[in-house]
Image (cartoon, protein in one colour):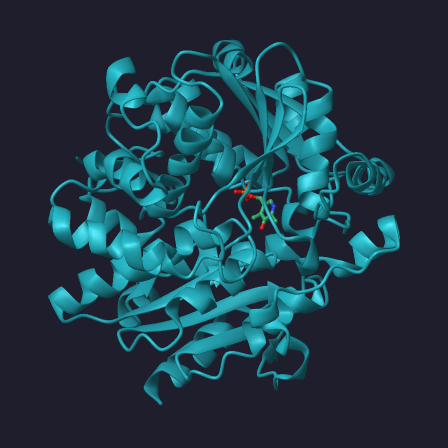
Length: 461
Ligand SMILES: *Cc1c(COP(=O)(O)O)cnc(C)c1O
């Protein structure tokens, strides 16, 4: 299978190349040139298989011959062995036709582990085989960074630099990034917000001399392999509530549009998905865009669901690419307009998006209230991101089963959860000493060349 850029002019790559590259050289994002489909019978036959077996079957056509079947199965097994639940992504019922998909049983307690643990395995295998090393640079609003550092710590073919917005991640997120002691992982606190971090990383990828010098690789949600790994749990969960014989809808707490875009890929592969509901917090650019057809940047207001405090939603570009019938030039034009504040989606493309996605937002008050009522009504303690999802899902309930994605463990955001419920969630016992471990972090200004210099120096030692 070949991978093409959403802006139409970067070279076509293999899966392995797209995975190791991240952002395309024309500034676009890689997507498969076509999406393989599964028949009703093929999907039905997956019912009851293990998470790992379903993962292998779903991802294999996208990965092609990058790994042998046996090797790929081993990588998948290694990726999920460290999860704290045998089902990997267990489903619990919240009410009539409403289910919660718990994606927080991985080593850093957020759904990012599903993709990052697998990417760590795949990077290591591919680099080892080629005798290469890479420098991974990523921006995080909290959870990607901790998942990346956890997945790559100690791997000798990789240095990892994670830029996070100083003072805007939770203490658990920060400590998960700053306490690993391996010398190949580097936590960088940038003076700015998440969009600033993301912009620095994008600029680094567009500085081709630097990019080649340090063999830059990206594992942000722009990396196709991340999206791919997330497609799997749409299948496992939908199968649990009656797919493929029944339609299923999903509500997804959304920031960078990676997780929900994986749901769209599952739908295109033939999974019986009715609606994909985008749930945003008060930083509601995606909700506004789906309501009005205009993508207009406003400032970011910090919220109690910080992993969704985003205005520039990278993966939305992939959704636009398909909505524009894969016209790279049209996408490039819109992304150019975005630099000066925003763009209008064409009538045709907007109609396509409206057929696939619905949306809603939850205010700070609604999010807190949802944490409280869910605890009282179901005993389920939600993290604020998952609470945004559950709140929005309630407005989209119908006779079709709704699965809401729970994207993080409540103990990752204990202050917001305690404020809402009076109950302070405990960290799982394997992480109980997180608050006692020494931290290691470098604080930097929002300055591209200074950060590039820092990276050059660090990878030499
Ligand atoms: C990353 C993250 C999100 C948003 O996911 P996207 O793929 O960026 O849309 C939501 N909740 C949590 C807890 C996250 O870590």
